[in-house]
Length: 480
Ligand code: N7H
Image (cartoon, rainbow, N blue to C red; front, side, top):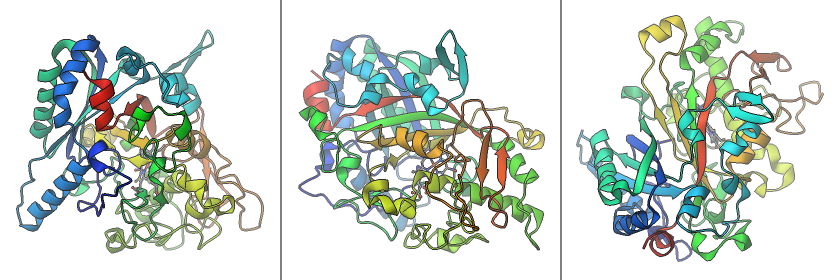
């Protein structure tokens, strides 16, 4: 998700003032390293004063567009080192807004409830005791968190310099609740998440701002940005919320050795297909893309790295070519989370209004030889999942609960004999509390067979919902 094409074509329009929008939201801060600082506000007046001085250092979308051009130029000049870059963004939980004296509603009940209150409904693992759900989260995410800083850089020192600037200006007005360090994976795994799949390929194009590549979903700016055209809750928002967005943070552990063992033990058995290729095919069918990023809807039987690397082709599909699961299981991760033509009967907006802008980064070390040998995770690793949307109910919450966790989604699907079929869980992020999950369609020749997934390969360790204000709101409403 960190891998956004470097030279994003983007046009400033009178409708969208890119200098007013924080840089991670629609184009993503450039990052090889990222520090997430979750904080509490101890001294609201001191914080507001420090923030005033910090605002010029907060990275806007206009800054990111400039930085990405400079990075591209640096690369084209043949330099083999990275160009020194850094970025700072900030966002606040509902508790954080209240601490700053901002008591009016931003018009989003999920934001106001906070993620902890929704852990059970999201399907996170945990226990029920005395009518209260206790998720298996990192303790820090069960504490009050008022805000989050995002510090990014081309290297750890670049990101740390940005963090020091903030520490210096805010001093003791904030206290750290948790620090998470993310980093792009090394060598040829750069841009790939920990299961090994290339990430950051498909993101929505913002109408009139980012020209769409073939197959890219075009969304109105208000699907991501508050009080812009397409924000379904515009009337409920205060004026200062304009150009803000809700930031979802999820700490998602990935059980990589266990995932690899599952693929190894359950290869898809097709005539003439060697066992290791059968395992690779199962992985591709669970995700919907090969590890290179090539979509299985276009190349269902073999990987195609050339296609994967071509932005004019790697997103140009919509699952309409083949009606059953021969090419792509209905439950494949990229199909559950962006069903493209699967909802065509409900109109063109049925998918677009649930779009999110993703901007996460992997965390944790590479799998050690011992972990690989024992097929057992010993070190925490996974994805610092970050996404932006103007409505949590339409964005992250909807995708997780109504699509990924919903065995009957996509609706109206049939098997080869014309019988109705329930697709099962999204095998990557679908959650069922502590219970088993099943998925259909993994084997293209016996599509009705259920495959039971032994464990959740992705385990939520917590998170929070934040509001990422515009630069003008930071100046007028959040600082003094
Ligand atoms: Fe996913 N993965 O490695 O399997 N994701 N994701 N995701 N995801 C995508 O197209 C992954 C998560 C979306 O437009 C790719 O950029 C993993 C959450 C959406 O075609 C890969 C985790 C949510 C898309 C992964 C994880 C989503 C998408 C293909 C957790 C939302 C775009 C690369 C550890 C609730 C779909 C690409 C489209 C793509 C993986 C989390 C949503 C490889 C490992 C929590 C909307």
